[in-house]
Image 1 (cartoon, helix red, strand yellow):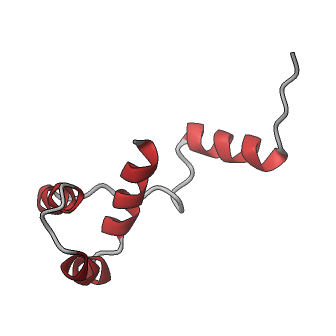
Image 2 (cartoon, rainbow, N blue to C red):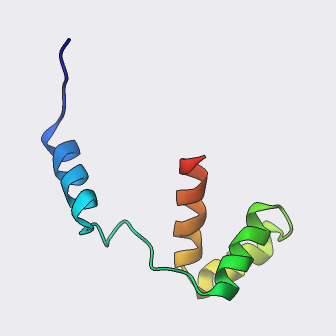
Length: 71
């Protein structure tokens, strides 16, 4: 059995494990923003309205993308 890693994968994993990947990790959402995200992911907010929210708070898009990738 052999394992192959690239240097970028190892570096990215190291930064992630140390919590130093702030460029990729969005800031924590407020309770109101979390509720807004949940409503969007449940299909209760149309994309046109969502784009307005994301314009005001870009971290919402980062959280939505992270949730999509984790599921």
